[in-house]
Amino acid sequence: MIPLCIPEIRGNEWKYVKDCIDTNWVSSVGSYVNLFEKRFSEYVHSESAVVTNNGTAALQLALVTLGIGAGDEVIVPSLTFISPINTIKYVGAEPVFVDVCRDTFVMDAEKIESLITPKTKAIMPVHIYGHPADMDRIMEIAQKHNLFVIEDATEALGSTYKGKMAGTIGHMGCYSFNGNKLITTGAGGMFVTNNLEYGTRAKFLSTQTKVVTENKAFYHPEVGYNFRMPNLLAAFGVAQLENVEEYLKVKKENAVYYNEFLSEAHGITLPIEKDNVENCFWLYSILVEEEYGITRDELIQKLNEEKIEARPFFMPIHGMPPYSDCTHGDLSVTGELYARGINLPSSVGLKKEDIEAVCNVIKKYAK
Image (cartoon, rainbow, N blue to C red; front, side):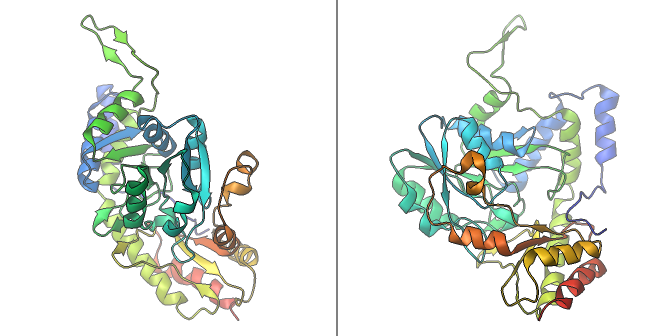
């Protein structure tokens, strides 16, 4: 089986994790927690970074840090993994769904303003599959209407927008280190911001708002959250981060191979990179158009029969029971992309011959 996207473990992971075990620093306090935050912040060029136990927690932490809650609305795409939508509900706010762009799959910035109401408090662009949203336009709208911007960059580590790392352009950004992400800690996430006050607040909230008194007792002045990452996983993350540039290079090279092999596949639309954008190509994603020889689902089946793992785009969240009553604009592009989109194998360990094998199956069924 050629898998969809699996971890690449080739560096100092064993060494650093063993150090945690040898020194008994295995829980949520330890030198690797601090080191991972420091080095990640340096890598993405943010003023502050707070490590969390998963990417969902990082998104919830961002909302809580900004005081977003009951009665508030957050504009977000429906074409996404469900995590960002759930976090809006966790804090008592309501998601408002905006459509996406057909070419980049991300939030359509030109459709945001029509959804803004007096209850709107934030915009949450999701840089789905690695391509950044139009952050200049989103920030312009946010400034005009006095809104916060929380970037869901969980799939876009290493992607850039006009030279800035995805996740560092809004008021806050969040990343995931799930096993299928560019770098992994097994489970984990990171909150970043260029506002030191927000960073300090987020760290305090994420660690149970714990204050250590003079006699070493714990005092908690407000409700906090246990979003902490164990030192063991942070050690793994430090090792992974040491190879992030190499992993990015491979992802981009593999995208070039896909583009080359599929350039003449009739009825297949390839992913793009907008001007001034670098796509990390976390997943290489294509569209199966009407003029292709078979349907999207039939192609997935044919790939699976050849022991190639492929997956459809995320199912739109607004069609699911918990969110079917939420406010939304015209979501026709969202629906079309779900019906046509396929994620193809995108692991860092993927070989050129694997990519060619995948593409040969796709070309076989093109008209």
